[in-house]
Amino acid sequence: MSEDPSPEERANDDTPPDLGATGAAMREEWRTEQEAATDDAVEQWRHSRTLLDVARDHMHRGDRVAITVAGHRAVGEIVEVASDRIAVLDELFPGGGRRVDVHVVDSVPLTLRVVERARAGGRSGSRTSTFRARLLELEASGAPVAIATVTDAEALVGGLNVGTDMVVIATPIGIETVIALSAVASVSPAAG
Image 1 (cartoon, rainbow, N blue to C red):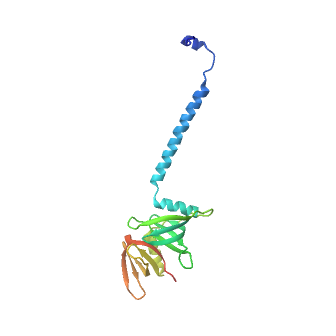
Image 2: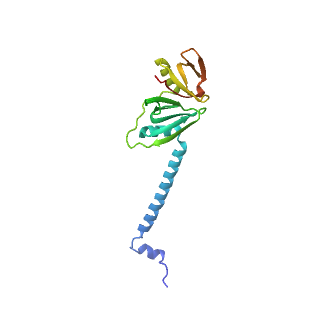
Image 3: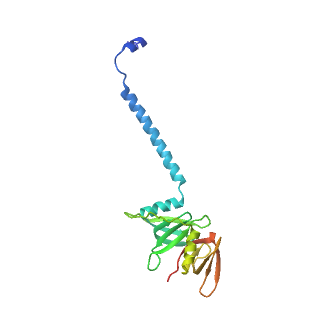
C-alpha cells in the first residue's frame, strides 16, 4: 500500500498538477451562474413590462391585433403607441383603414390579442402625444368623431369639444352629451 507523498516530496515533484478537470469544473460553475443570472434578468424584464410595452413590440413587428375596449373592437395594425393610448388602423370599418385611438387607462377595460404575426414590416411609431392631445387634434379638425365609452354599447357620433377632464359630443341637431375623460374608451373619425 502506498502512502501519500509528503509535502517535501510534492514540492520536489516536477509533474504539473492536473488543471484540466479543475478548469472545466470552474467553467461549468461559471456558465451555470451566468445562465441563472440571465434567467433572473429575463424574469424581471417579463414582470416589469406594461400593456403599452407589449403594444409597442407588436407595432414594431407589424402584427395584426384585435383590441377590445369596453365592448368595442378594432382589428388591424398598431400605428402608434403613446403614454396612454394605442392607435390602430381598424380594418373592420366599412371601407377599411379608419384610425381608432384607444384610451389606455385603468378605468377602461381593455384586451389585446394577436390575430396574425407579421412576417415582415412594422413601424417605428415616432409620435408620442397623449390621448387628450389626440382628442384636441380631432377637435381642431372640426370633423365629426365617433366616441366609444364604457357606459354605452353604441359609439356617440358628433362634434367634439374637449375639456380638462371631460369631452362633449354635440349631435347635428344640437343634443350634447358630456362624458368624463376616464369613461372614454376610444375615438375615431366618424363615417363620412
